[in-house]
Length: 365
Ligand code: G6P
Image (cartoon, rainbow, N blue to C red):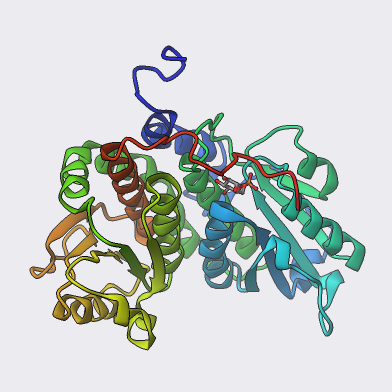
């Protein structure tokens, strides 16, 4: 067991640190940056993408947040209306056009019963189905029309970490591929997204190199009453994922919000005992988010921010530096939130790799 953990005390921390390599594997051989093209080795029937009306993502847990990140990428890069649904809530619904819909299951294991159920309902309605998964030969790969593997390598920790990053990177490549094939994305725009993706492993490594700063923050705030995570746009799924990670492994009360919603309710919970962690990067409308953070600070809350390189918010209590990688900056910010969750839980001596009541793969509905 110790040997398998490669010198790390927990699989989770090992897997957090494996992210640069996992991302390199995810991207390997798939990008033609100069041409602004992506090759995911998937094919669609002739005319399908041109007629595509809607992409609907179905997923659970962390994969749902990866899917939520991707909806914005599909709308921006593929020029297709996109939505994400919690798999157990998914129904095809009236007034839809299944033959012009792509339903994408995002599932690390490829075995989650809720996600498989959603895919079966989509197929029954007549939609084309697609899986984004880490697991070769998994059930989902046998049920869908097409699969893209995220190639993150095995993940043992119950709390998903590297698979989230690799799922988002794969979905970003899929968004570019579809956008290019539909003629919705110019080569020059695609190129800049692909350059950002290429910069991901190095950017994540820089975050990992800052781990002592995150550990210090975790030690300083670990005894707080609750933790709130906020962001806008691509920062929203990251805020939600940051809160999920912390609650899963530390058992502390943590919630994620769209930053603009703070004032519509959650602000009533804010006190000096509730730190606010904010995503303040490209793609997450940082300035507006910071205004909401300031509202929380006015009520005494400590504020920690993941801030784009080059920006500075002097009023933050803690500022984590996020390297400049455009629309994947929120994904890099997420690595700070993973480390924060890990160190809070570790300080408390929690069962990090196997949190109480949770399973790695849930095969019941
Ligand atoms: C379980 C795990 C989560 C995971 C979710 C979806 O609840 O504890 O970490 O995000 O299942 O799993 P999947 O394999 O479908 O991505």
